[in-house]
Image (cartoon, rainbow, N blue to C red; front, side):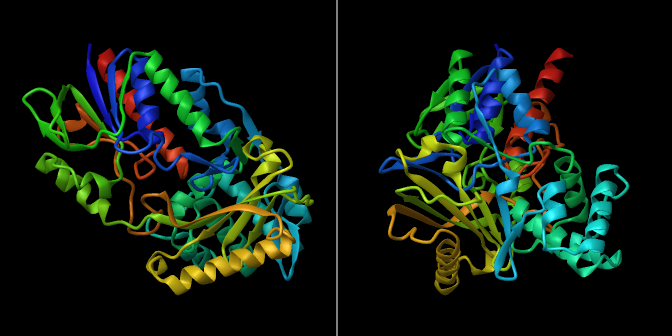
Length: 431
């Protein structure tokens, strides 16, 4: 039986390991920290907090749907209420243009501009507009002389979906490819009941049922290429020999390993790229503060608050509530204490305005001043890491993660890269 080592136990590593084990391969998963990586949950005083946002976009067309079906994962979906989504606009709230009804009701864009925006949506869905490889979406909007309000809305959407402070720098080809799928969906935003931890537990269950082995708290420090296969070594000098390796570590972590020289030189450029960084502020309050909305986006300061308890009451004690605020960060400012303090002030202002008395009802709070939601940011000059090298290693070494080539955005890249690798190696075995 073919043996495969998966190094890294985040969403991508667990997905790849479970899919490969399902194919009948002998899989060993090595994880140095907590299984799930960034996709973990923490319970404090009865309130469940995820490590950052855990939304899944366009789930009816998502790769995760394929993985859930293939592995028979037991997942309950909670779908976003678009009618309860709002944008801050001119000092008050207006409907978020999340769908056709929201677009008709919203005040962020006027009548004729709504028609122009709708036309841009139609062109995107019908592939009449695909972008230009050498142009960012900001440059494309200027070239096409798109009206100011339409451009602003297109960039607002990109900022909220890509979690970036610089949506204008997203490659136009990436922008249109992403929204071609998202504009077609009937489930634009969804959550997993119980948070990421439920998905992590399910992937772990399948992996173990298929005979896979999980090496917890095991930090691989070296991978040596042998005449056939690879030798792995951890910091305790324990060794394992396998036929193939899947690296499910960010490039910046991979470069810390002792790897074959060709692999090291291959990943090095990607280790220099900027990640997508956010500040996450979670609060657990009681009693519940009822509002006519569950999501508010502050387009001026590029941050949003979600009432996660509206979708999943199980993450809070009875009559409790979990509010999560995510603020997008500029990479060059993440080490600036004054910048981060200002972000926290903006977050408090947003909560004060839309959830009055939240501080009086506060039970617990958690702040993550720099959470990485995607290891390689989509911006001009940055590209995702390929799933395979092209120098003969394709048969034996692969790369998966939200920093890799795949479909979708954020966590969807983790799932799609894992599915790509499993499908490629299954196809090779079939021949």
